[in-house]
Length: 225
Image 1 (spheres, rainbow, N blue to C red):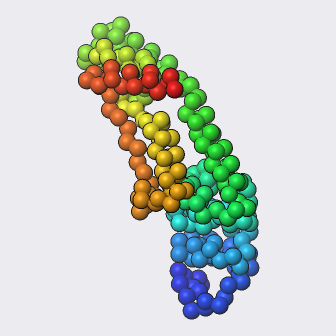
Image 2 (spheres, rainbow, N blue to C red):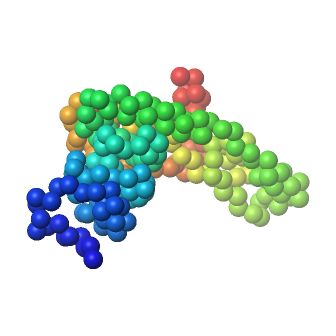
């Protein structure tokens, strides 16, 4: 039976077979997984790495130690970096050995571009627009309060004219700006901007009639750059 302190009394036991590490990693004990991954003498199978990459999604320290393993399969390194926070990506670049630095940097660029492409895919608001139009035709817009969740121009127009009470919007430009600023500082040695849990929340914004004009102006300025 393996527990979290399975190897505490055996500091000299540094060579682990892939069969043993598979069994250890399958337990999903965070401390055990970190010790296995940090041990260069531990052989880890593709199945073992798949298990630890899944764990690493909620464990920043494990993600960093896993990401710099030279024997981590490329497709799993890509998955790990795709799901990692900007803070974890910055830490990985900072700790990456010379022979892995370019690979990790290129994967980060690739997954970041993938997120941008996903965000750029046009969303279909046809049903929502049809719903608002029907309410307007029926004269019921003043009886039903409509709240949106997007920054579509028609939604913002509805907020401006008063047919939509307000809308909640995300800040993708701020995500990118804060992530790149943090990564640059981290690489320079300044780790002060990274919170203890490795997570930075970029809050959404509530747009209503009082601030819709300002928000629309900001959007126009950002889209020009």
